[in-house]
Length: 272
Picture 1 (cartoon, rainbow, N blue to C red):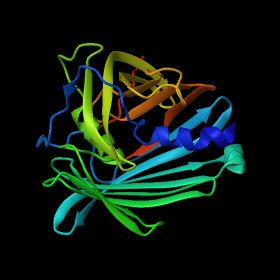
Picture 2 (cartoon, rainbow, N blue to C red; picture 1 turned 180 degrees about the horizontal axis):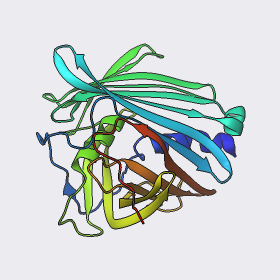
Picture 3 (spheres, rainbow, N blue to C red; picture 1 turned 30 degrees about the vertical axis):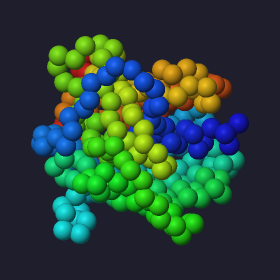
Picture 4 (tube, rainbow, N blue to C red; picture 1 turned 90 degrees about the horizontal axis):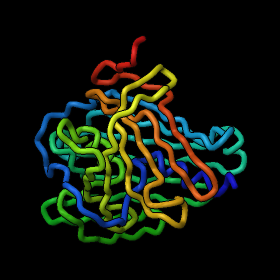
């Protein structure tokens, strides 16, 4: 059972998957020049994922400034691995990277280098936002393919940081949904996010006021239903992920913030 859970659970930590569902929604701003308010270079945080009594894996994210050619960019790195008993049954070591524009958040390069119980994949994607194309280099197969993308497309990691900086602010109604174009595994997706309101979460660091969201995911293969995944992010300028919980076909998986440093804004907890 652990061998089934680990790769799926790990992927949940990397931006909560994506959606193929349809529905009425608002679009997030495209090519926004709004200043980056939610993160800065040097930020690092870690999530701990657990399934029942098992600490299934950890995922950490770090952010730095870099250049890609002559373009100044943010360079985001994500690393996920199984630990403890889960690692004994099923070893996972996954690396994700994204180079995205420091002003618009648009991705230029995405790297996915994974090892999941012996299954390996090493892929690099280069985005051209003028031609709306993604050039996918499969380093394992030594082949390159080009795909058409939707306007204002994001990769799995750049999407996460873009959403943090553009989460809906005041005036958004409960149950209102927002979407964003994504490209992953040689396919275009529409990621939908439903706003559920505000809630206070008891974290490792104390009680944290959060915004509550529900990513719309595919049901049937892993999840119990289309709306089985819930995300809580801090209701402050950091928009830091505090918890997500996924109800799957054989139980429930939860991930909580474990550590962090170099946040752009003070981390707020509820004081008695």
